[in-house]
Length: 171
Image (cartoon, rainbow, N blue to C red; front, side, top):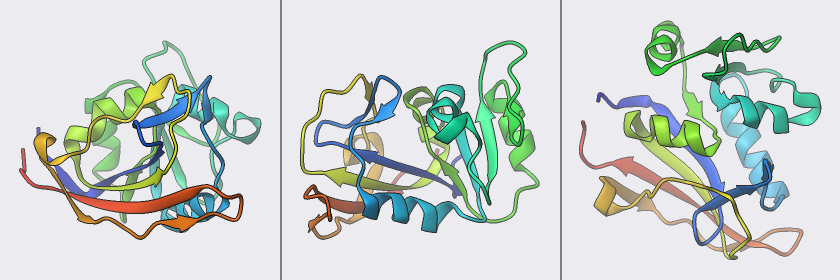
């Protein structure tokens, strides 16, 4: 498995690594939403079919190249590129300029975490009832947190910080 420096896992998770419940975010933190937008506008994002369905009106995000990784036969999404497997995904990514963000959900994170050279994770200082989880990003799994980020309190009262990771071991 070959990691790519331009492939960046981008996520938000609670203290237990929970990322969602019933195909929705666990919490909405305006600062995290702005952070996501700042990173991804003008770039490429990779998401799954269910994550796309969770977006407003189930539409691809504007001002980004949306790539949907879905094994659902015949699935199509207007305004997005749909790929059925990792090989097809990397064929499409060969011609992409700029950064490529892996943005979920759980199955997409699990499929692509091994290819990512970096990760940027917003951590919430809370434990929520989750049914979808981020893969373990720790030293034991070959990652180093090089920036823990400072704890901040969101305008809606939720404490959060943004952590940045690098792959320790290139596969």
